[in-house]
Image (cartoon, rainbow over all chains, first blue to last red; front, side, top):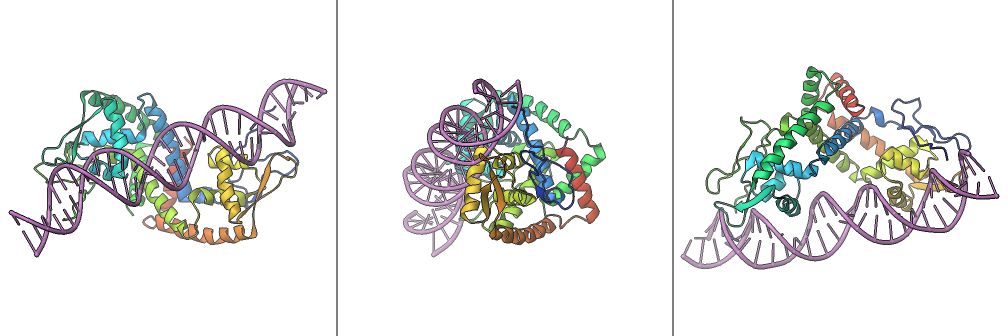
Amino acid sequence: MRKTGVSVRKTEPLPAENNARDRAGERRSLSLGRLPGLLGYTLRRAQLRVFQDFAASMDGEGLTPGQIGALLLIKANRGLSQSDLGVALGIDRSSVVPLIDRLQARDLVRRAAHASDRRAHALELSEAGEAALIRLLSRLEAHERRIAAHLSAGERRTLMDLLARVADG
Amino acid sequence: MRKTGVSVRKTEPLPAENNARDRAGERRSLSLGRLPGLLGYTLRRAQLRVFQDFAASMDGEGLTPGQIGALLLIKANRGLSQSDLGVALGIDRSSVVPLIDRLQARDLVRRAAHASDRRAHALELSEAGEAALIRLLSRLEAHERRIAAHLSAGERRTLMDLLARVADG
DNA sequence: TCAAATTGTTTGACTATCAAACAATAATCA
DNA sequence: TGATTATTGTTTGATAGTCAAACAATTTGA
């Protein structure tokens, strides 16, 4: 059978409404309606693209985005508690448990004794964790270069500024 | 007990590495390390904020973001198949089934007979679906205004352009 | 005509998430 | 000090979203 597949148009004929099939069996490209004009949609599309490149980029290290985030935050805040990590990652502290479990099982992170609170764990990178982080940062830099490949330095700065203003309200 | 909580700094002291607690029990704000300088991180942060506003905005209608996307695409492509919808939404066609199930159970969408392919369903909005979409579009406009509230018209255009270039590689 | 592909569906697995409860521990206050 | 209240990490259970594989019905292409 012929491989057909549906393409998705980025530019829009007007009005943005049509039939997906005009004649018997003849398939046209899909319209996205008003979606392309929406900031929310464009933002989601860019984020999806970047996330996919990120995930693929870190795939070689066998680490998920959440695990990478944890490693970066532990590096920047040696000794933080699991609860604090949850706040920083925006996830529940009960979700931190299996996350750290996996990193600890791979000997990348230690649950050290906390100096002043016997309930808490002080999270630290192991030597292997430090080494993994170095490899990871180099991948991260390559990733950043790729996603901004079509932007000038000034455009990148502008984009960062505008995004930060959207993010911070 | 006093409510403590951890704050998350947006600007960074250098170098971006410190102890989460300096003295016994004294908690400092968390460092984000190199994260704030990354385009990927800033993009994710903005997208998260926008997504939360979007979800809250559509909450009153009792519809999830995925369902909204489906309604918009069906409106713009009356009669499209479930497989095509899956491609447009970026999800597997087996995931389209429960999505349409719910919309059909609420009488917003019909699985009509397909004119030329007896395997396929031609998706259509019901009258109630059309009405819901109108309310939805008005919420969507309000949402778009909110998320761009801190941008001028020109800045919004610039942001859209830069994001599209990131998204399309 | 007949083999290969596609459609919608079901089933099963997997991940990520939260909420609620728990014991151990810490902090606050009377 | 002693009692109450809060927090920490954990376990358990629920929910949601996703995919892969298989299936019958149907369509397509050779």
